Image (cartoon, rainbow, N blue to C red; front, side, top):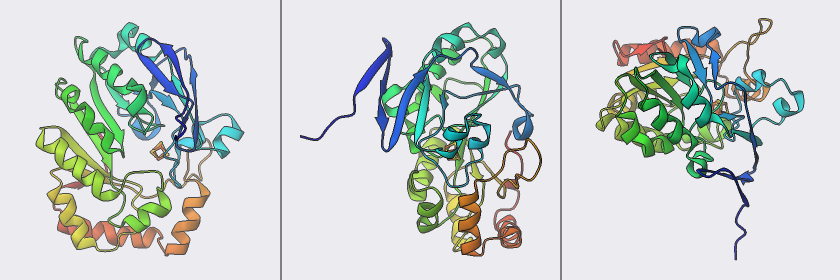
Length: 281
Ligand code: SF4
């Protein structure tokens, strides 16, 4: 008989496993659920993150820089904390009404744990009832998001950013081994788009692309309404987040420098006229 991970219950509706994959899971009560948006998302009023940490553990993840505990930052990808009182806080949060909110700035709200906790789903249910509703942008690289299409459709202003960082699943496995395949992400984008959801492809950080023409064709065929592109965060400024060093090592091995990135972006711009921007709002 295979061993099932233990579960503990925080609130009647929130079931939290003690592990997900190789990552440890714990729960934590937080004082605030909204954070004033700054830096790359300063065009928004607030950021909202249902979890602390992320079991996807992407090699380039800049979110680890926002983790004040050095041991946890170094162990990024191997632990997740569930904000156990997130639903109660959202229910009481008056600043959410009509606010422009970026969900998933330092975690993936649809990481595998979400299948069991359904925390993001509960948050969307509460927010969809607010008047006026918040204007949401949800950032993910997980096809689990398709589970909540019915809730996305309840919002007047809603956009989902799906990260698709390369056309090659071999490349994806090296930089994002914990994430879904590129094929599954593009299939999710197609499903979301067919359901009328405004999807933006986030080609950021853009990783090595094997065949630019066929990548552009996949992007066009996905049904996404827009796409934005970015290179690794340089991380050279004081107090600014930066790319984790293992991703920069992989990029060096791949010969993927800023020049290669610029060349690929220039080709994509020609193949996708008007679709590729540098904005995510
Ligand atoms: S999914 Fe996002 S938050 Fe999670 S490890 Fe990858 S880049 Fe970081």
